[in-house]
Image (tube, rainbow, N blue to C red; front, side):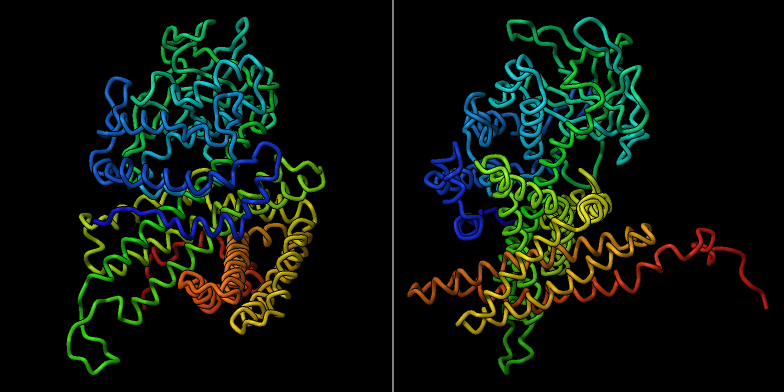
Length: 606
């Protein structure tokens, strides 16, 4: 089983050449970002390889255990978490006033990728701290910020977000957890399920951010409020007091991410109700929770990319070592390493090209997050915020769907050995499967893209991004490099496909909204393969310019070759998605429900 090694060269290339960390460093408070970026990546890489990676396989086999409301994480996790917290990784993007490092969101891209590639079961825990910190920072009172954020930043306490209930999965309008006022706090009663790191032994306190309803709350999503519910109550001096009325009543037994305890939590188990504190204004909880949710959705997209890259590394190493069959195109009778077989090479190139496209799109989106938060001009903040909102569902859903394909392809490279747990590739295949499901399924992300990001603003943001891509494609077409020029022509043609389909969906929605929604997932994937090409081809253009400037580096040559492969093997999916959407959307709802299982009815007799 291979050891994870972070792809530092490509990470640095994307940070500097595509996400332009030098420009991010000009934003208020980020002056040192470009200078410290390489050092941060090196340190993170070392931690991922030396501390987290050795625990990945053992944690998958051992899993977590539950007994009498307490959860024990796999051996080594507690010590690894202490090291992770002490090194300051949790506070990377948090303002220094709360004990953080005050670095840009952009640097979360590569660091999150490393943690998740090395050990996704571990990485899910600290990831949630950052979401809780951001939600309290933006929506909490000054007292709440002072009391909770520094401890979450230091890692002394951990955070969760508690949304899902047995009857309320993606439909949060169905949340039934209650919050009854009592003095300066509320009593919370109800049950939450699928809570990541909802109970564990890594830290003495867990700060749950819980969605619940006040007694006079209106129905639906407009009647949901958000509450801070500590596992252990916090005294006025900041010390820990008595245990709150919240109990873990079980953990799930899952197909993957076994090092991550996924918990069922009962609030009010003893009957009196857990003490909770309202965050912000009543009935605005879902709005606040989306702060955490959007951060989590971006992170899950990067998480999937990370697992895919880990799987690709494993497949590449195996392909270089495994000797099997002679080369059919050669007269040499000797068996060769499987990397010399054309079909294996095709599989590896498919993995490599898609991973690099996902990485580029994810990091560039992270850079826009920084511009949206910090740019001094309101018009620029607004533009980047719109871009981020358009791209978040794409990063989350396209990256997770594509990463499943990459992990499956990587397993295929192993042949029969891939199906054996000892090789490790099966774990990546199992681990990545959840990423298209949690934090909003692919279907939910696609509905968000079509309904809220395309139809609601009459396609204004999508049109602006299409124009930006179109302008870039024309620039490539004027390049003196023949390969880059050809990439420009290909990209330009496929951008036209995206623009045409976007207009078709907008027009269809005016007459038949269900027809527009029926094609939402293929539409999201169309956005993904096209936007991924945009960023990957930007990299090829930069690489060509480096080579033309006299630099001789196989890394840059590989960038161009990989982009050409993507153009012919991945971007060509756009035509297929367009056909599904424009010609097949009307077919989705035509078969009556009763006819789905006609083949199981009584057979027709002669």
